[in-house]
Image (cartoon, rainbow, N blue to C red; front, side, top):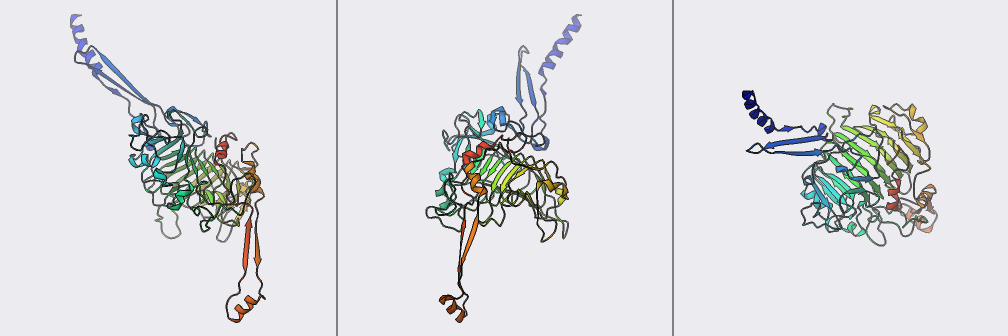
Length: 497
Protein backbone atom coordinates (compact mmCIF):
# COMPACT_ATOMS: atom_id res chain seq x y z
CA UNK A 1 0.00 0.00 0.00
CA UNK A 2 2.81 2.43 0.84
CA UNK A 3 4.42 1.92 -2.57
CA UNK A 4 1.15 2.57 -4.40
CA UNK A 5 0.56 5.88 -2.57
CA UNK A 6 4.06 7.06 -3.44
CA UNK A 7 3.47 6.47 -7.16
CA UNK A 8 0.19 8.40 -7.21
CA UNK A 9 1.76 11.76 -6.19
CA UNK A 10 3.80 12.47 -9.38
CA UNK A 11 0.92 11.19 -11.53
CA UNK A 12 -1.45 13.76 -9.99
CA UNK A 13 1.08 16.58 -10.48
CA UNK A 14 1.62 15.54 -14.11
CA UNK A 15 -2.13 15.59 -14.87
CA UNK A 16 -2.58 19.03 -13.28
CA UNK A 17 0.26 20.43 -15.39
CA UNK A 18 -1.38 19.51 -18.71
CA UNK A 19 -3.00 22.27 -20.77
CA UNK A 20 -6.30 21.43 -22.39
CA UNK A 21 -7.26 23.62 -25.27
CA UNK A 22 -10.26 23.45 -27.66
CA UNK A 23 -9.34 24.66 -31.12
CA UNK A 24 -11.23 27.42 -32.95
CA UNK A 25 -13.20 26.27 -36.00
CA UNK A 26 -13.70 28.97 -38.61
CA UNK A 27 -15.34 27.64 -41.76
CA UNK A 28 -14.53 29.79 -44.78
CA UNK A 29 -12.98 32.41 -42.55
CA UNK A 30 -16.37 33.72 -41.43
CA UNK A 31 -18.69 32.49 -38.64
CA UNK A 32 -16.93 31.25 -35.44
CA UNK A 33 -18.17 28.31 -33.44
CA UNK A 34 -18.32 28.41 -29.67
CA UNK A 35 -14.82 28.17 -28.29
CA UNK A 36 -13.85 27.24 -24.74
CA UNK A 37 -10.21 27.71 -23.95
CA UNK A 38 -9.16 26.25 -20.59
CA UNK A 39 -5.69 26.64 -19.21
CA UNK A 40 -4.54 24.91 -16.05
CA UNK A 41 -1.23 25.83 -14.48
CA UNK A 42 0.44 24.57 -11.36
CA UNK A 43 2.96 26.59 -9.31
CA UNK A 44 6.31 25.24 -8.20
CA UNK A 45 4.89 23.81 -4.98
CA UNK A 46 2.00 22.13 -6.90
CA UNK A 47 -0.41 23.36 -4.22
CA UNK A 48 -2.50 25.87 -6.27
CA UNK A 49 -4.35 25.52 -9.56
CA UNK A 50 -5.53 28.53 -11.57
CA UNK A 51 -8.31 28.07 -14.09
CA UNK A 52 -8.88 30.63 -16.80
CA UNK A 53 -11.91 30.37 -19.08
CA UNK A 54 -12.49 32.47 -22.14
CA UNK A 55 -15.56 32.06 -24.27
CA UNK A 56 -16.47 33.40 -27.69
CA UNK A 57 -20.13 32.99 -28.49
CA UNK A 58 -21.27 32.50 -32.04
CA UNK A 59 -23.08 35.56 -33.42
CA UNK A 60 -25.19 35.26 -36.56
CA UNK A 61 -25.17 37.92 -39.27
CA UNK A 62 -28.68 39.11 -38.47
CA UNK A 63 -27.76 39.71 -34.82
CA UNK A 64 -25.52 42.46 -33.47
CA UNK A 65 -21.92 41.61 -32.56
CA UNK A 66 -20.93 40.72 -29.01
CA UNK A 67 -24.53 39.96 -27.97
CA UNK A 68 -25.68 43.60 -27.75
CA UNK A 69 -29.38 44.40 -28.01
CA UNK A 70 -30.45 45.34 -31.53
CA UNK A 71 -33.42 46.69 -33.43
CA UNK A 72 -34.89 46.23 -36.01
CA UNK A 73 -33.16 43.05 -37.20
CA UNK A 74 -34.89 40.80 -34.71
CA UNK A 75 -35.43 37.82 -36.96
CA UNK A 76 -34.72 37.19 -40.63
CA UNK A 77 -36.18 34.45 -42.81
CA UNK A 78 -34.32 31.23 -42.18
CA UNK A 79 -33.25 30.95 -45.82
CA UNK A 80 -30.96 33.95 -45.41
CA UNK A 81 -27.40 32.84 -44.80
CA UNK A 82 -25.64 33.88 -41.56
CA UNK A 83 -22.11 35.11 -42.21
CA UNK A 84 -21.02 37.53 -39.50
CA UNK A 85 -17.82 37.09 -37.54
CA UNK A 86 -17.04 38.73 -34.20
CA UNK A 87 -13.83 39.15 -32.22
CA UNK A 88 -13.27 37.76 -28.76
CA UNK A 89 -12.47 41.01 -26.98
CA UNK A 90 -12.55 44.78 -27.28
CA UNK A 91 -8.85 44.66 -28.17
CA UNK A 92 -9.90 43.78 -31.73
CA UNK A 93 -12.48 46.58 -32.02
CA UNK A 94 -12.08 50.27 -32.83
CA UNK A 95 -14.75 52.53 -31.33
CA UNK A 96 -16.02 55.75 -32.91
CA UNK A 97 -18.24 58.45 -31.41
CA UNK A 98 -18.98 61.70 -33.19
CA UNK A 99 -20.27 63.17 -29.94
CA UNK A 100 -17.61 62.06 -27.46
CA UNK A 101 -14.67 61.04 -29.64
CA UNK A 102 -11.38 62.61 -30.64
CA UNK A 103 -9.24 61.51 -33.57
CA UNK A 104 -6.17 61.66 -31.35
CA UNK A 105 -7.65 59.06 -29.01
CA UNK A 106 -6.57 55.40 -29.21
CA UNK A 107 -10.04 54.28 -30.35
CA UNK A 108 -10.98 52.31 -27.26
CA UNK A 109 -14.46 52.18 -25.77
CA UNK A 110 -13.35 54.61 -23.06
CA UNK A 111 -11.51 56.91 -25.53
CA UNK A 112 -13.15 56.54 -28.96
CA UNK A 113 -12.17 58.18 -32.22
CA UNK A 114 -14.33 60.91 -33.69
CA UNK A 115 -14.62 59.91 -37.36
CA UNK A 116 -15.18 56.66 -39.22
CA UNK A 117 -12.59 57.43 -41.90
CA UNK A 118 -9.96 57.87 -39.19
CA UNK A 119 -10.86 54.46 -37.78
CA UNK A 120 -10.57 52.87 -41.22
CA UNK A 121 -7.15 54.44 -41.76
CA UNK A 122 -5.67 52.81 -38.65
CA UNK A 123 -7.58 49.52 -38.85
CA UNK A 124 -6.03 46.26 -39.93
CA UNK A 125 -7.89 44.12 -42.47
CA UNK A 126 -10.76 42.32 -40.74
CA UNK A 127 -10.96 44.75 -37.82
CA UNK A 128 -14.39 45.58 -36.42
CA UNK A 129 -15.35 49.24 -36.14
CA UNK A 130 -18.24 50.10 -33.80
CA UNK A 131 -19.81 53.50 -34.45
CA UNK A 132 -22.16 55.35 -32.11
CA UNK A 133 -25.16 57.21 -33.48
CA UNK A 134 -24.66 60.58 -35.14
CA UNK A 135 -23.94 62.18 -38.51
CA UNK A 136 -20.52 61.60 -40.08
CA UNK A 137 -19.41 63.34 -43.27
CA UNK A 138 -15.74 62.49 -42.97
CA UNK A 139 -12.91 64.23 -41.17
CA UNK A 140 -12.94 67.99 -41.77
CA UNK A 141 -16.25 67.66 -43.62
CA UNK A 142 -14.67 66.08 -46.70
CA UNK A 143 -18.02 64.54 -47.67
CA UNK A 144 -17.04 60.94 -48.41
CA UNK A 145 -15.33 57.91 -46.84
CA UNK A 146 -13.05 55.43 -48.63
CA UNK A 147 -11.38 52.17 -47.70
CA UNK A 148 -8.67 50.13 -49.38
CA UNK A 149 -9.06 47.27 -46.90
CA UNK A 150 -11.77 44.87 -45.77
CA UNK A 151 -13.28 46.03 -42.50
CA UNK A 152 -16.45 45.25 -40.54
CA UNK A 153 -18.44 48.41 -39.77
CA UNK A 154 -21.24 48.13 -37.20
CA UNK A 155 -23.14 51.36 -36.62
CA UNK A 156 -26.04 52.80 -34.60
CA UNK A 157 -24.76 52.11 -31.09
CA UNK A 158 -25.61 54.19 -28.07
CA UNK A 159 -22.78 56.16 -26.53
CA UNK A 160 -21.94 53.32 -24.14
CA UNK A 161 -21.63 50.86 -27.07
CA UNK A 162 -23.96 48.38 -25.39
CA UNK A 163 -27.11 48.76 -27.52
CA UNK A 164 -27.35 48.79 -31.31
CA UNK A 165 -30.57 50.35 -32.64
CA UNK A 166 -30.81 52.10 -36.01
CA UNK A 167 -34.15 53.66 -35.12
CA UNK A 168 -33.20 55.03 -31.67
CA UNK A 169 -29.68 56.27 -32.46
CA UNK A 170 -28.84 55.90 -36.18
CA UNK A 171 -25.35 56.28 -37.54
CA UNK A 172 -25.70 58.41 -40.68
CA UNK A 173 -23.24 59.01 -43.48
CA UNK A 174 -24.90 62.21 -44.66
CA UNK A 175 -22.70 64.81 -46.40
CA UNK A 176 -23.91 68.40 -46.51
CA UNK A 177 -24.37 70.67 -49.52
CA UNK A 178 -21.02 72.40 -48.96
CA UNK A 179 -19.13 69.13 -49.46
CA UNK A 180 -20.28 69.02 -53.11
CA UNK A 181 -18.16 72.08 -53.80
CA UNK A 182 -14.88 70.17 -53.79
CA UNK A 183 -15.60 66.43 -53.54
CA UNK A 184 -17.89 64.45 -55.79
CA UNK A 185 -17.66 60.82 -54.74
CA UNK A 186 -19.76 57.99 -53.34
CA UNK A 187 -20.63 58.33 -49.66
CA UNK A 188 -18.69 55.14 -48.86
CA UNK A 189 -16.43 53.49 -51.40
CA UNK A 190 -14.22 50.38 -51.31
CA UNK A 191 -11.40 50.60 -53.80
CA UNK A 192 -9.28 47.47 -53.29
CA UNK A 193 -9.56 44.54 -50.85
CA UNK A 194 -13.06 43.50 -49.77
CA UNK A 195 -12.95 39.86 -48.60
CA UNK A 196 -14.86 39.63 -45.32
CA UNK A 197 -16.32 43.16 -45.45
CA UNK A 198 -19.48 43.70 -43.38
CA UNK A 199 -21.58 46.91 -43.34
CA UNK A 200 -24.28 46.84 -40.66
CA UNK A 201 -26.80 49.37 -39.25
CA UNK A 202 -25.69 52.42 -41.25
CA UNK A 203 -27.93 55.08 -42.84
CA UNK A 204 -26.68 56.32 -46.21
CA UNK A 205 -28.42 59.58 -47.17
CA UNK A 206 -27.49 62.00 -49.98
CA UNK A 207 -30.54 64.19 -49.49
CA UNK A 208 -28.57 67.01 -47.88
CA UNK A 209 -25.95 67.03 -50.66
CA UNK A 210 -28.22 66.72 -53.72
CA UNK A 211 -29.41 69.80 -55.61
CA UNK A 212 -33.18 70.21 -55.93
CA UNK A 213 -35.21 72.55 -58.13
CA UNK A 214 -36.64 75.74 -56.71
CA UNK A 215 -39.06 76.09 -59.63
CA UNK A 216 -40.39 72.66 -60.65
CA UNK A 217 -41.64 69.35 -59.35
CA UNK A 218 -43.02 70.34 -55.97
CA UNK A 219 -45.15 67.92 -53.97
CA UNK A 220 -47.32 69.13 -51.11
CA UNK A 221 -45.89 67.89 -47.83
CA UNK A 222 -42.42 67.12 -49.28
CA UNK A 223 -39.42 69.39 -48.82
CA UNK A 224 -37.97 70.96 -52.00
CA UNK A 225 -38.70 70.32 -55.67
CA UNK A 226 -37.49 67.66 -58.08
CA UNK A 227 -33.91 66.41 -58.18
CA UNK A 228 -31.72 68.43 -60.52
CA UNK A 229 -29.52 66.57 -62.98
CA UNK A 230 -25.73 66.81 -62.46
CA UNK A 231 -25.61 69.07 -65.54
CA UNK A 232 -28.13 71.51 -64.07
CA UNK A 233 -26.82 74.30 -61.85
CA UNK A 234 -29.01 75.19 -58.90
CA UNK A 235 -29.76 78.77 -57.92
CA UNK A 236 -28.01 78.20 -54.61
CA UNK A 237 -25.38 75.56 -53.87
CA UNK A 238 -23.64 73.11 -56.16
CA UNK A 239 -24.74 70.58 -58.80
CA UNK A 240 -25.96 67.13 -57.81
CA UNK A 241 -23.19 64.56 -57.26
CA UNK A 242 -23.90 61.70 -59.66
CA UNK A 243 -22.39 58.87 -57.56
CA UNK A 244 -23.79 55.82 -55.72
CA UNK A 245 -24.38 55.86 -51.99
CA UNK A 246 -22.27 52.72 -51.43
CA UNK A 247 -19.79 51.65 -54.09
CA UNK A 248 -17.43 48.72 -54.62
CA UNK A 249 -15.25 49.46 -57.62
CA UNK A 250 -14.82 46.83 -60.29
CA UNK A 251 -11.08 46.82 -59.54
CA UNK A 252 -11.64 45.40 -56.04
CA UNK A 253 -10.31 41.98 -55.18
CA UNK A 254 -12.78 39.16 -54.64
CA UNK A 255 -14.25 37.67 -51.49
CA UNK A 256 -17.40 37.56 -49.40
CA UNK A 257 -19.20 40.84 -48.66
CA UNK A 258 -22.27 41.40 -46.46
CA UNK A 259 -24.49 44.48 -46.43
CA UNK A 260 -27.21 44.19 -43.77
CA UNK A 261 -29.67 46.18 -41.66
CA UNK A 262 -28.87 49.45 -43.46
CA UNK A 263 -30.89 52.29 -45.03
CA UNK A 264 -30.13 53.74 -48.48
CA UNK A 265 -32.10 56.88 -49.24
CA UNK A 266 -31.99 59.74 -51.78
CA UNK A 267 -29.20 58.32 -53.91
CA UNK A 268 -28.65 60.51 -56.96
CA UNK A 269 -27.19 57.50 -58.68
CA UNK A 270 -27.48 53.87 -57.45
CA UNK A 271 -28.23 53.01 -53.86
CA UNK A 272 -25.68 50.17 -53.97
CA UNK A 273 -23.44 49.52 -56.96
CA UNK A 274 -20.75 46.86 -56.81
CA UNK A 275 -18.29 44.98 -58.96
CA UNK A 276 -18.04 41.40 -57.69
CA UNK A 277 -15.02 39.28 -58.57
CA UNK A 278 -15.52 36.13 -56.48
CA UNK A 279 -17.21 34.71 -53.39
CA UNK A 280 -20.66 35.65 -52.12
CA UNK A 281 -22.15 39.13 -52.05
CA UNK A 282 -25.05 39.24 -49.57
CA UNK A 283 -27.54 42.12 -49.42
CA UNK A 284 -30.14 41.44 -46.74
CA UNK A 285 -32.56 43.17 -44.44
CA UNK A 286 -32.01 46.67 -45.83
CA UNK A 287 -34.31 49.56 -46.79
CA UNK A 288 -33.83 51.33 -50.14
CA UNK A 289 -35.98 54.42 -50.79
CA UNK A 290 -35.89 57.18 -53.39
CA UNK A 291 -32.77 56.13 -55.30
CA UNK A 292 -32.14 57.00 -58.94
CA UNK A 293 -31.42 54.50 -61.74
CA UNK A 294 -31.55 51.37 -59.54
CA UNK A 295 -31.56 50.53 -55.86
CA UNK A 296 -29.15 47.58 -56.33
CA UNK A 297 -26.77 46.81 -59.20
CA UNK A 298 -24.10 44.12 -58.72
CA UNK A 299 -22.09 42.87 -61.69
CA UNK A 300 -19.41 40.24 -62.13
CA UNK A 301 -15.89 41.44 -62.86
CA UNK A 302 -13.89 38.22 -63.24
CA UNK A 303 -12.29 37.49 -66.59
CA UNK A 304 -13.96 35.16 -69.09
CA UNK A 305 -11.32 32.72 -70.32
CA UNK A 306 -13.37 30.18 -72.27
CA UNK A 307 -13.10 31.86 -75.64
CA UNK A 308 -15.68 33.76 -77.75
CA UNK A 309 -19.32 33.78 -76.65
CA UNK A 310 -18.52 32.41 -73.19
CA UNK A 311 -19.38 33.93 -69.85
CA UNK A 312 -17.52 33.25 -66.61
CA UNK A 313 -19.38 32.73 -63.35
CA UNK A 314 -17.67 35.04 -60.85
CA UNK A 315 -19.68 34.36 -57.71
CA UNK A 316 -23.03 34.46 -55.91
CA UNK A 317 -25.34 37.38 -55.18
CA UNK A 318 -28.06 36.95 -52.57
CA UNK A 319 -30.64 39.75 -52.28
CA UNK A 320 -33.04 38.87 -49.48
CA UNK A 321 -35.52 40.51 -47.11
CA UNK A 322 -35.05 44.02 -48.44
CA UNK A 323 -37.72 46.72 -48.75
CA UNK A 324 -37.16 48.62 -52.00
CA UNK A 325 -39.40 51.58 -52.87
CA UNK A 326 -39.49 54.56 -55.26
CA UNK A 327 -36.65 53.73 -57.65
CA UNK A 328 -36.49 56.66 -60.06
CA UNK A 329 -35.44 56.77 -63.71
CA UNK A 330 -32.15 58.15 -64.98
CA UNK A 331 -33.84 61.16 -66.61
CA UNK A 332 -36.96 63.09 -65.66
CA UNK A 333 -38.92 61.82 -68.70
CA UNK A 334 -39.29 58.39 -66.97
CA UNK A 335 -38.03 56.53 -70.06
CA UNK A 336 -34.66 55.09 -68.99
CA UNK A 337 -33.93 52.83 -66.00
CA UNK A 338 -35.70 53.05 -62.66
CA UNK A 339 -35.30 49.50 -61.28
CA UNK A 340 -35.42 47.92 -57.85
CA UNK A 341 -32.85 45.20 -58.61
CA UNK A 342 -30.78 45.05 -61.77
CA UNK A 343 -29.54 41.59 -62.70
CA UNK A 344 -26.20 42.06 -64.41
CA UNK A 345 -23.82 39.43 -65.86
CA UNK A 346 -21.39 36.79 -64.53
CA UNK A 347 -23.14 36.19 -61.21
CA UNK A 348 -25.54 33.65 -59.77
CA UNK A 349 -28.49 35.68 -58.38
CA UNK A 350 -30.86 34.54 -55.63
CA UNK A 351 -33.53 37.22 -55.14
CA UNK A 352 -36.05 36.26 -52.46
CA UNK A 353 -38.43 37.51 -49.74
CA UNK A 354 -38.13 41.14 -50.82
CA UNK A 355 -40.80 43.85 -51.05
CA UNK A 356 -40.23 45.80 -54.27
CA UNK A 357 -42.69 48.52 -55.22
CA UNK A 358 -43.13 51.91 -56.86
CA UNK A 359 -40.36 51.51 -59.45
CA UNK A 360 -40.57 53.89 -62.40
CA UNK A 361 -39.90 50.99 -64.78
CA UNK A 362 -39.75 47.52 -63.19
CA UNK A 363 -38.98 45.85 -59.87
CA UNK A 364 -36.39 43.52 -61.44
CA UNK A 365 -34.45 44.04 -64.66
CA UNK A 366 -33.15 40.93 -66.41
CA UNK A 367 -32.20 42.36 -69.81
CA UNK A 368 -28.41 42.13 -69.69
CA UNK A 369 -28.34 38.54 -70.98
CA UNK A 370 -27.04 36.89 -67.85
CA UNK A 371 -27.61 33.13 -68.11
CA UNK A 372 -31.13 32.09 -67.10
CA UNK A 373 -29.83 29.13 -65.11
CA UNK A 374 -28.02 31.64 -62.89
CA UNK A 375 -31.17 33.55 -61.88
CA UNK A 376 -33.64 32.71 -59.08
CA UNK A 377 -36.55 35.01 -58.18
CA UNK A 378 -38.69 33.50 -55.42
CA UNK A 379 -41.21 34.56 -52.77
CA UNK A 380 -41.15 38.30 -53.43
CA UNK A 381 -43.97 40.83 -53.16
CA UNK A 382 -44.33 43.33 -56.03
CA UNK A 383 -46.70 46.28 -56.35
CA UNK A 384 -47.29 49.48 -58.31
CA UNK A 385 -44.22 49.14 -60.52
CA UNK A 386 -45.19 51.39 -63.42
CA UNK A 387 -43.84 49.23 -66.25
CA UNK A 388 -44.60 45.77 -64.84
CA UNK A 389 -42.65 43.71 -62.28
CA UNK A 390 -39.94 42.26 -64.52
CA UNK A 391 -38.19 43.35 -67.69
CA UNK A 392 -36.79 40.34 -69.52
CA UNK A 393 -34.80 40.03 -72.75
CA UNK A 394 -34.69 36.44 -74.04
CA UNK A 395 -33.02 37.63 -77.27
CA UNK A 396 -31.46 40.70 -78.84
CA UNK A 397 -33.80 43.63 -79.52
CA UNK A 398 -36.44 42.00 -77.34
CA UNK A 399 -37.79 43.35 -74.06
CA UNK A 400 -40.70 41.59 -72.41
CA UNK A 401 -42.66 43.23 -69.61
CA UNK A 402 -44.01 40.64 -67.18
CA UNK A 403 -46.21 40.67 -64.08
CA UNK A 404 -45.42 38.52 -61.05
CA UNK A 405 -48.33 36.20 -61.90
CA UNK A 406 -46.50 35.18 -65.09
CA UNK A 407 -43.11 34.46 -63.53
CA UNK A 408 -43.82 30.72 -63.52
CA UNK A 409 -43.56 30.73 -67.32
CA UNK A 410 -40.04 32.12 -67.28
CA UNK A 411 -37.16 29.89 -68.33
CA UNK A 412 -35.00 30.75 -65.32
CA UNK A 413 -33.60 28.56 -62.54
CA UNK A 414 -36.47 29.27 -60.14
CA UNK A 415 -39.50 31.59 -60.00
CA UNK A 416 -41.86 30.42 -57.26
CA UNK A 417 -44.09 32.09 -54.70
CA UNK A 418 -43.99 35.60 -56.16
CA UNK A 419 -47.13 37.69 -55.91
CA UNK A 420 -48.43 41.09 -56.88
CA UNK A 421 -50.20 42.78 -53.99
CA UNK A 422 -50.11 46.01 -52.03
CA UNK A 423 -48.88 45.54 -48.43
CA UNK A 424 -51.44 47.56 -46.47
CA UNK A 425 -49.23 47.81 -43.39
CA UNK A 426 -46.31 49.40 -45.23
CA UNK A 427 -45.41 52.62 -43.39
CA UNK A 428 -44.76 54.81 -46.42
CA UNK A 429 -44.70 58.61 -46.32
CA UNK A 430 -48.19 59.31 -47.71
CA UNK A 431 -47.35 62.66 -49.28
CA UNK A 432 -44.46 61.07 -51.19
CA UNK A 433 -46.66 58.18 -52.27
CA UNK A 434 -49.36 60.53 -53.55
CA UNK A 435 -46.81 62.50 -55.53
CA UNK A 436 -45.39 59.32 -57.06
CA UNK A 437 -48.78 57.93 -58.07
CA UNK A 438 -49.69 61.15 -59.86
CA UNK A 439 -46.23 61.91 -61.30
CA UNK A 440 -46.46 63.17 -64.88
CA UNK A 441 -44.03 64.38 -67.50
CA UNK A 442 -45.00 66.67 -70.35
CA UNK A 443 -43.32 68.44 -73.25
CA UNK A 444 -44.34 71.45 -75.29
CA UNK A 445 -42.69 72.26 -78.62
CA UNK A 446 -42.50 75.80 -79.98
CA UNK A 447 -41.51 75.52 -83.61
CA UNK A 448 -42.71 77.69 -86.48
CA UNK A 449 -41.09 76.84 -89.83
CA UNK A 450 -42.65 79.93 -91.40
CA UNK A 451 -41.29 82.43 -88.91
CA UNK A 452 -39.10 85.18 -90.44
CA UNK A 453 -36.08 83.87 -88.55
CA UNK A 454 -36.49 80.31 -89.86
CA UNK A 455 -37.18 81.52 -93.40
CA UNK A 456 -33.92 83.46 -93.33
CA UNK A 457 -32.08 80.40 -91.93
CA UNK A 458 -33.49 78.28 -94.77
CA UNK A 459 -32.36 80.82 -97.36
CA UNK A 460 -28.86 80.79 -95.90
CA UNK A 461 -28.71 76.99 -95.68
CA UNK A 462 -28.86 77.01 -91.87
CA UNK A 463 -30.98 74.59 -89.85
CA UNK A 464 -34.26 75.93 -88.57
CA UNK A 465 -34.70 76.29 -84.82
CA UNK A 466 -37.40 75.77 -82.25
CA UNK A 467 -37.70 75.24 -78.53
CA UNK A 468 -39.05 72.41 -76.40
CA UNK A 469 -40.11 73.06 -72.83
CA UNK A 470 -40.67 70.20 -70.43
CA UNK A 471 -42.28 69.84 -67.07
CA UNK A 472 -42.44 67.06 -64.50
CA UNK A 473 -44.69 67.00 -61.47
CA UNK A 474 -42.26 64.93 -59.39
CA UNK A 475 -38.84 63.37 -59.95
CA UNK A 476 -36.60 61.86 -57.27
CA UNK A 477 -37.71 64.38 -54.69
CA UNK A 478 -36.10 64.26 -51.28
CA UNK A 479 -37.58 61.47 -49.15
CA UNK A 480 -37.58 62.22 -45.40
CA UNK A 481 -34.81 59.89 -44.25
CA UNK A 482 -36.22 59.41 -40.77
CA UNK A 483 -39.44 58.10 -42.33
CA UNK A 484 -37.37 55.42 -44.07
CA UNK A 485 -36.50 53.98 -40.65
CA UNK A 486 -40.19 53.18 -40.14
CA UNK A 487 -40.09 50.62 -42.97
CA UNK A 488 -38.39 47.93 -40.88
CA UNK A 489 -40.65 45.13 -39.67
CA UNK A 490 -43.79 46.13 -41.58
CA UNK A 491 -44.62 42.69 -42.98
CA UNK A 492 -43.53 39.49 -41.23
CA UNK A 493 -41.23 37.37 -43.37
CA UNK A 494 -41.02 39.84 -46.26
CA UNK A 495 -38.92 42.94 -46.68
CA UNK A 496 -36.67 44.38 -44.00
CA UNK A 497 -37.48 42.89 -40.59
